[in-house]
Amino acid sequence: MSLQGKHIVLGISGSIAAYKSAMLTRLLIRKGAEVQIVITPAGKQFITPVTLSALSGKPVISEFFASGDGSWHSHVELGLWADMMVVAPATASTLGKMAHGIADNMLITTYLSMKAPVFVAPAMDLDMFRHVTTQRNLEILQRDGVQIIDPTEGELASHLEGKGRMEEPEKIVAILEECFATKKELAGKKILITAGPTYERIDPVRFIGNFSSGKMGFALAEECAQRGAEVLLITGPTAMSLSHSAIRRIDVESADEMHDAALKAFPEMDAAILSAAVADYRPVQRAERKIKRKEGEGLTLTLTPNPDIAAALGSIKREEQLLVGFALETDNEESNALGKMEKKQLDHIVVNSLRDEGAGFGHDTNKITILSRSGGKRAFELQTKKATAKDIIDTLFAST
Ligand code: PMT
Image (cartoon, rainbow, N blue to C red; front, side):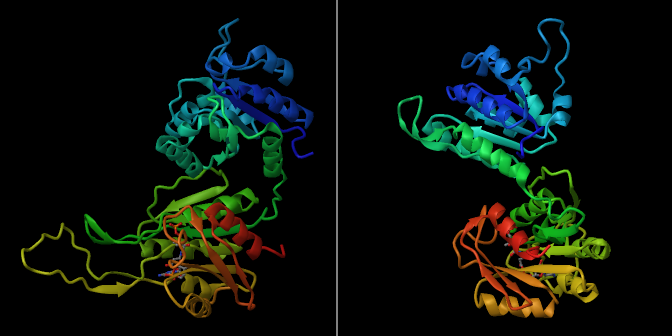
């Protein structure tokens, strides 16, 4: 049983679905987990701490201080103790506080101290769930590495029908088990990943760049780390953040900086996956001061090629090292990608096309085909970048 002996912090917030947390606690205990419940003040309006402590075998934590002796409940210690935190039910208010770090109750301070993976199981009325604010908060949390257990459709407390019912406890337990069951098949491997765009400065206020958000590269980094690899992520400018402690992040701005960081690190690596959208050219000259607009006059920039990072790594690659590139194409996808694989001495190339809706820059989804030097070809349907990262890593390390 994969939950045997695991330390789980169960956060409960104020929703009618809190009655399901009693069953969730019981199932987790039956699986051999140790459960520490942290409940919000509103949560206690829906289910009593007495019921929950009887089921979990531990006092339920709600306040910052114990009411009996005034001793401090340490959210920091809980953050270190836990192998996982799951907030179920997670109300719109709790999701909002988590997304924005509003630490006004013990559940949120515990979340902010958490070192382990965090799951949330939202529960709310359908209009609240689909409201742009809730969706934005879920997006922020997802970007911060929180895993969302999607609510299901059905009759809600409002007696309306729709999406917003907290997932059933049995299903939540199965999802948590799957997380622990994930094989650490990349343990001992060092993987370099490049992500995001590069910015090539024209003057102090302008640059040449592209629309890469970093989402694809960050999903790859998280996936590799989850499978036990030591990850070095070299990223161009992006708003993305990471949740995994096994990922070392180096922030760079230009192709030159990314080139230097990647070349320095590569000899120590077992593999490099190059998902960054590196600018192919940079201005020959960078103006020291802001270039002023001159009425009626055009502006000509002279560009010079940037170093090709993939080709540079390809030229020093050792036999046992794996080198993987990406190709973002608008036409002749496969033949262009095969040409790049050859020229840059890559072992595999992941092709995505701007002709496919939902694929490429910025989206949370991607649609890829993986071409291999050995002649292999695997095509995947449109799916989240997280699922895409899983498929890429499954394919690249199929035999390890
Ligand atoms: O960041 P997201 O918004 O999630 O978007 C993801 C993505 C679309 C950026 C990603 O999936 C992707 O396709 N990345 C490669 C984009 C690209 O422009 O590739 P390219 O065809 O220019 O380059 C081919 C390969 O050579 C790539 O691995 C690239 O990282 C590498 N390269 C390119 C130029 C250069 N000077 N140095 C390089 O290493």
